[in-house]
Length: 257
Image 1 (cartoon, rainbow, N blue to C red):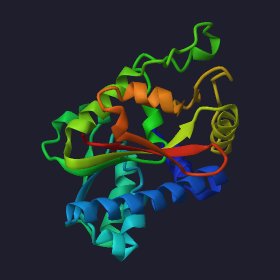
Image 2 (cartoon, rainbow, N blue to C red):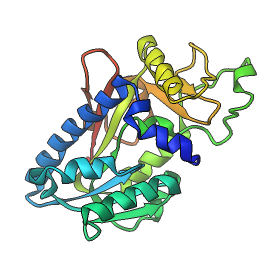
Image 3 (tube, rainbow, N blue to C red):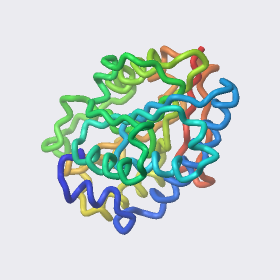
Image 4 (tube, rainbow, N blue to C red):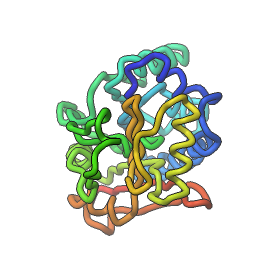
C-alpha cells in the first residue's frame, strides 16, 4: 500500500486528509493516552509498547510531546512493512533525540512471531486493523467480478492478532483503532477520503470494505465480526469504545486473560 512516494506523502499530509480522518487521529490519541496511564499505574512501572504499522511515527511524537505520558513508556518498538514509512519514522525519532527509547523494525505483521520480546501494550492505530486483506485479492479484476468477497472470516486478521496476543506479557493489552464502523455513512466517508487523496475506488456499496486501484484496502467492522475474528480471546476480555458521536469509528481493547 505504501510503496509509492506520492501516495505516502499524501497519506500523511493533512491537506489531503478528510476532517473525519484527522479528528479520528486525535480521538484515538486521547483514548490511547488514557490506556497508557491506566496500564502503567496498574503495573506500577513504565510499560513496553509495540506499534504495528508505525507509519510516519506520528503516535510516537504525540506521546513524546506530553512528558506526563512519555515518562510512562519504558521502550517503544515500531514495525512497518513499508520502507518509505520507516524512513519517515526514523527521521522523526532522530529529530526528537529518542533513539535510545525507540526501536524501528521493517517487518510484515504476518511475521510478528519472529519477535522474541513480550510487551505490556500492543497498538495498531489509525484504521490499520482494517488493512489485512487476503493475499489473493485481485485489485485489477475485482470491480468486474460477480462474486463478492466474503468477510465473515478474515484468516489474515485472525492470524496476525493471535500472534500479537501471544506477545503480551501478564496483564497486557492490545489496542485496535481507530477502526471503521460498518455502515453506509462511514462507507461514503471512506470513499471521500480516498478520492481526496487522488485515488480511484473500485468497490461497491454492498462490500464491507473499500479498496482502490492504487491497492489501498480498508475494512469496516461490526462488534460481532471483530469478536468472531478474535475467537481466541474470551469475550469478556474485549471491549469497545466509541471515538465519536456519529458512528464513524471505535477503539477496541483486548485484555490478556
